[in-house]
Image (cartoon, rainbow, N blue to C red; front, top):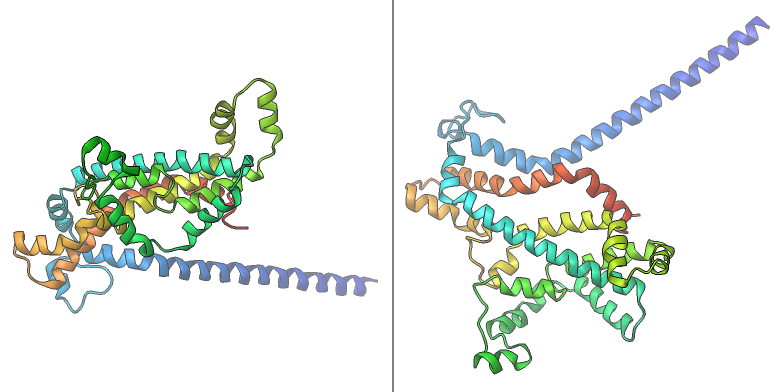
Length: 320
């Protein structure tokens, strides 16, 4: 009996050891995959940061590998001055945040309407929302340009002003498009809110109506509060895409003093003209510093809202 017990114990020990070894190998494989994927994603940022803090001696030093021997932040100081960074980033953040708040209000209301109300033409209108998601904005850039170049809403502008108004070089086209549910990625946000509101039980609204709450009170104080995961998801998406948008900014000729991303394209020329730095390699260092400064608010946003964003994305119908 003792030999049988010893044999069973040895077999059990081997199974346990094999199981531990398998778990260790799986964990090691996951770490390796995540490390590799993380490096692929972060390597451009790491490369730009290292290049931006390297000195002129490091650029021409053949012995330098990965880390510079004489790092410094002098390039960031000059870029902040040449880009008028703090004033421009403040104006850009005001522009981005106001557009995001307007987009949240409009898209959540439209998504709630599609999810909870039945009306004629509902399917056709929702098909238009899907078309907004599918069709690239480049295909409608000419009609958009002509519309806001000679803006005349149903002839009312001509009636009041005497002639169409040119809205180019202003932020008015972006606010008008966003208020009408046609802003940057608005179709996707409407779809996200629609999917989330459809998943909420109707008993919540019915209980509110029984207690005497109106439609608007129920929407703002009950439904929108319960839809907070989708609100956070859309907020992060909207902030990032509005902040990084240069397509509409170039189309509507919005000033680079409002959209800081546009300053990157001219930063190398500004450095060359004002500071007489004509070496292309050194100019790239200043451009890398400018890009990282522009990305800084987005990075901070992700660090602050990472957990809420992932939870909201999981519950908003984007994945799963």
